[in-house]
Amino acid sequence: MASTKQIDELEVLLNQRLVTIESNITDGIDNISKLNNCDCKDELDFAEASSDSFTSGLIISQQKQELKEIKEALESIKNGTYGICEMCDEPIAIGRLKAKPFAKFCTDCREIHENNNN
Image (cartoon, rainbow, N blue to C red; front, side, top):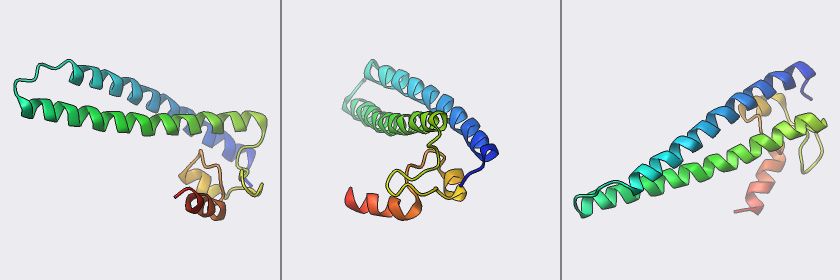
């Protein structure tokens, strides 16, 4: 079980990552807008802009998911459930939380969850 000090440190990391991701999403949306408004001189330029726009969209989508998970982790800190596996209600190892501060599952339950969702 994570100590109060460890949770406080992880909360700082979560808030820092939240700010970074929000900035990345904003920059990505701006980038897509610029790509969509670019003056393509030929089909190759258009294909490249379309590919870059698609890739940026995928990255934004992944970052929006991470942002959602970070916000959920911050909320769980507020309500006192942070660091508790959502599947088995056991504490999530501090090493796992340090590696992925927004983890919802312990290592064993994560494997079960991933196997069930693939």
